Image 1: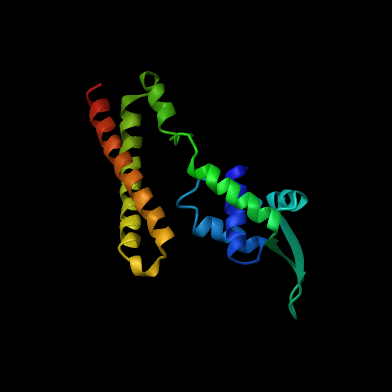
Image 2: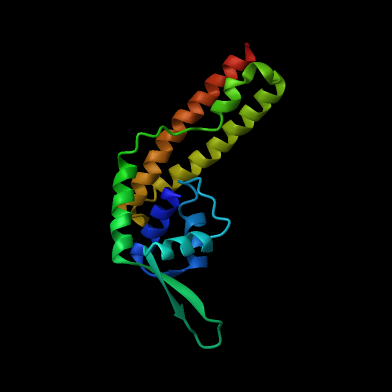
Length: 173
């Protein structure tokens, strides 16, 4: 929930937004960098409103149903800074789901494992191409977005190399 709060508060720092807009930004812009799944954005917004981190106002537009627009409060601004600073110093290692099946590798079929690893490698190559293409369009992105792209490209290069090594090892296993 901490990372979800950080993301929502960060989005609202830019400007007030309605729930669907927040959900769209999380999926479209941050989905590449976060495994956050937002099935319902309204429950976390409700909790954050109850904690005084955000406030909700009704926006009425002619010919449309009224909808809620959320904005960050001074308390939410302090919480955002606190959460961001904690995340910068986080000692949590990134846990990658592939590690669990590797632990149980002796109990899995070699043929199926190799097929899945090859698919994973192709997927990683596609994501890598997307990141590289976007990284080289630097003038379109602010510095903080380019840093995210660069970080994930480095992680992806390491993951792609490791999956290649795993394929070679499993082949000879």
